[in-house]
Structure formats: structure tokens, C-alpha cells
Image (cartoon, rainbow, N blue to C red; front, side):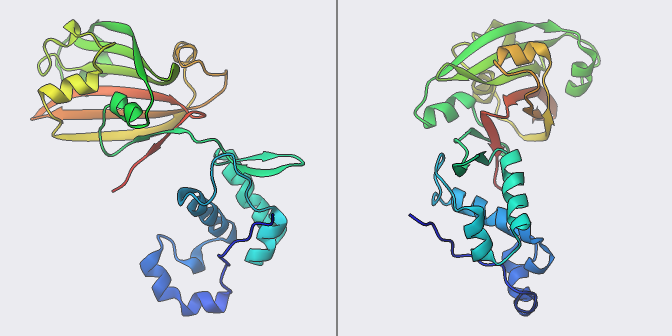
Length: 259
């Protein structure tokens, strides 16, 4: 059955006429957005709305060329970039499909990963690799401590038995003096700390980075596969409470947030 689309790229004259409306309704005005970017946004919108399901076939290049009125190379670039971003998968001789859904976590809202997994109806498990005092100089600086030790934990979080996060956390002992006495295979560090002292503020950075061999092995990743790395630091009162690096296999996980 032939699949058709509704959206078309407006000609330049129409884009100029509707510029004011576009400025109010788009992050990037239509006039300034390259055609391939418009196609990418359209594809992402159809997926986010649920019109195109994970594993489902999307319209062919020929259909998109006809519907949008652009050159084939423009459509090809849009689909090629979405494939590189792992939004789509292309199978020679069969067509282009929506990539399988990846696990999602929020960025701007600090949530317990066990709760997120449970909300999806799945089982969370945690394996504690490290729970010890540490004099790591970078960690002490990040926590604002003149001297050590800080507390250090490394934990692998899994969803239905599949590892999706490697948590490398340093904790301020002035804020959480009994951190090393906890069983983090039962309660996550996030849940424990928020239960005792809710976060007042936080800062974070996100990277695309290849993990070292140790992290890669514990996340059961292929050599060369990249990670989404979230670095986050949180405060309780005037004290830095924790500095954490969260490694996620890019093929199984993506980060999302709303403002």
C-alpha cells in the first residue's frame, strides 16, 4: 500500500509571504532552513507523533521527492543523516525503516533510573563494582573539597538484564557521611541521596564519547561503539553533594529533556 505525506516545502515566494508566521512557530524560519533539514524535521515529527512506528517502513525516496518537490539528492541526504543518527535504518532492496526504539531518560529532570525503568514496565537491576573512599584529585576539586577522601561508587544499571548505564559517582562525605554503608544493589544512589537531602541545583554536560575498555566491557558494547556521556554535578545547600559521570550505549539509549 502506498504511503503518502501531507507536508510540502513552500516555494521561496510563499516562504517570504509567511515569514512572520514562521518566526512565531519555528525555532528556525522556513526561509533560512535548508530543504534537507525540513525533510528531517518532518520525518522526526511523524515518528514522535506515533504515525510511523519503530520497525515500520517509511515512504520511499521517490515518494518523498514527489511530495516535497525537491531533488532526489536532497531527500537522500536527509535520510542518510537520520540513518547516521540512528533514527532510521536502511535495508538495500527493502527500503527505509524507523529504527528500533531506544531506552530514554530525562536530562533536565533528575530522576531515579530504577523508577524510569519501572515506569516502562521493565525490571531494574544493579551491580556494584566499586564502593570505597577516594583521593582522586579531579573529584576533590569538583566537590570543592580541600582534602580527601571523597566517597566513590561505580555501578552498572540494567534493564531486563541488559546493561544501559555505567554510573561513576563521587560523593561529598560532609553531605552524605554514611554513603559507604549503603547497599546500592537494593536502592540506587540517586534514590538514597534525594530521600535524605533533595537537590537544590545542578549543572550538567553531555558528550558523545567512546568509553575505555573497562566501561565498554561492563556495558557489553562492541569495540568502537560510542556512548552518550552525561556529566552532572549537584548541590545540597551551599555544598556540592555529588559529581557523577553516566555512560550510556548510544545504540540502546538516548537522552531527552524539556524546558
